[in-house]
Image (tube, rainbow, N blue to C red; front, side, top):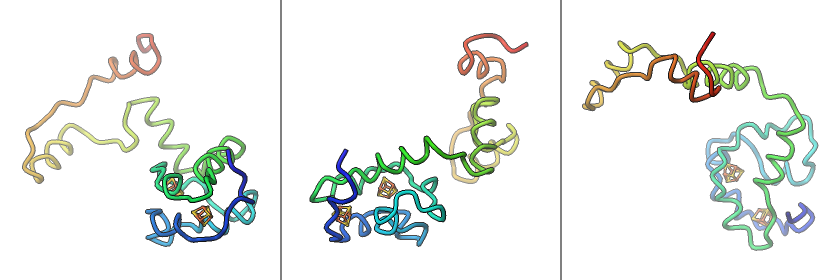
Length: 128
Ligand code: SF4
Ligand code: SF4
């Protein structure tokens, strides 16, 4: 992993980052101080575009993931993780809502997987 000190501040990563495009974070600020408390690495979409374009090989993505390993996820993320482990879905949706959304987009209906099957897939055992 290349250290942030390898950054020559060309701005190429900023140009391609989707989160930068919506004003969500500032990579160059993060590289200046990867431990800055006010910087949210949780917004990174893990697209790796910054990694692809960096001329000096700074592993921005790797640095952000390293920081994630050492701090608690924001509350909304934590809730989403717990929902995924419970149901396989980050956002709860009923069969009726799913049918409506798919119909609105002109898509064929699909059935949500049974909760028991999701539990077995995620936890390798039937639910208690
Ligand atoms: S991996 Fe993260 S920081 Fe890099 S371009 Fe994608 S969203 Fe931006
Ligand atoms: S692309 Fe690489 S060298 Fe350029 S600003 Fe981003 S991290 Fe620095």
